[in-house]
Amino acid sequence: QVQLVESGGGLVQAGGSLTLSCAASGSIVSTNAMAWYRQVPGKQRELVAFTGGGSTTYADSVKGRFTISGDRAKNTVYLQMNSLKPEDTAVYYCSAGVYNGAYYRGYYWGQGTQVTVSS
Image (cartoon, rainbow, N blue to C red; front, top):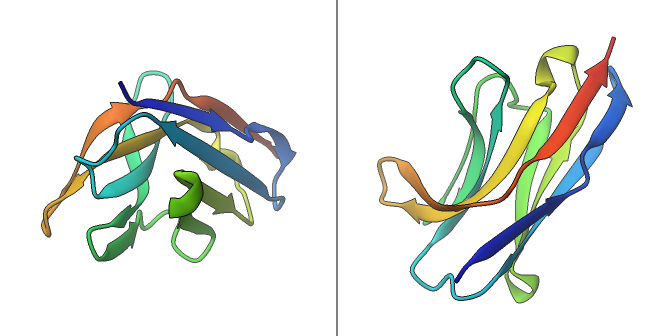
């Protein structure tokens, strides 16, 4: 059974930075990529970034501000978020899945961590 546990969320002022971490445990050999999504109440979950399968991709809204990285030895993926804006406020979810060269599909999900950016 795969478990993904996020940490690092919190309250930050606009312009500030946060780093989210996601530690994976269990067998994730069937996956080749990890991703971060975010969701605001009443809206669909949005792909923020993923890495794996030979590719790293960011949503246009976070390009140049967020960086996704991974530590395979620790089975951990990070999301470094800089120059945060109030519109980045959301629950952020970690995902492990597969990138097939065309799109990313998540198979495992964390419980989410709240990020709140005050203006």
